[in-house]
Length: 284
Ligand code: C2E
Ligand code: MG
Ligand code: MG
Ligand code: MG
Image 1 (tube, protein in one colour):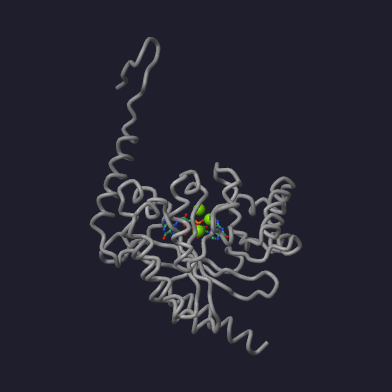
Image 2: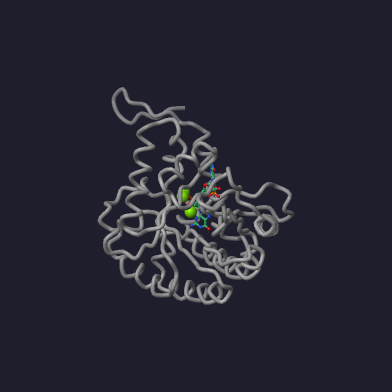
């Protein structure tokens, strides 16, 4: 039942830990077997606070794990880190980029305007030599559709000194680079001086306390001001309540995203959402 690792020191054998590890290995194996079509892109609108207009969409991947499609889709928090561990995140990321490139033209038509299309990328993808070419191909299609591709990456990519060249190569394709979950990483702000970012997204953990906690409010205000001073566009993530949006508007935060406006939706539903917003704004 238990194993001695030293005098008076016991490590208990917990069967549920073994079960969890077996479940993780099963996820990794299923990810390796999964066809590209098993990865479905949902889209969440990004809204300009001043006008209420939808100016962009974030692509968020989901996994149809079972063949018959009866079980709920699996969310990225349950598989992306395992896909990074096993390398399948490269194929998943390619599939997401291709879907977004394929969807861009119809999304632009439904919205009646150019859209900023934001795609999350893993550091594992960034380290692959062929990634820049994949991005360049997506940029060509997305630009032809009248939209713009943004690649979202967390501060963790900046820890790697070698990533600087890769980031400039990516920016040279015409893609815009965005720092995701800004404020939660460990890297220094110095990277903003030399690396080609055009925007950052304030992490939801700061936004959620903005109406109730003065420290979070001060941090968010500081981040918004920093964006203005450095000429970087700022998106506040995870806006769920009207009082949060009011505070962000007063601070001058340009862009927001969150359940208050819209949840991530499958392609057909986000097209409907865009079309109904366009018609409403036409008749307003
Ligand atoms: P993220 O890039 O920071 O995406 C925002 C997450 O916040 C999404 O979760 C979104 O559904 C959720 N969210 C948006 N508004 C609200 C809100 O008002 N309240 C709350 N509570 N949540 C909100 P999701 O879709 O589960 O994605 C989780 C993470 O998985 C993403 O965080 C991103 O890091 C990763 N991810 C998603 N798609 C991809 C992908 O295609 N490739 C890679 N490498 N990672 C991805
Ligand atoms: Mg993101
Ligand atoms: Mg984020
Ligand atoms: Mg995140």
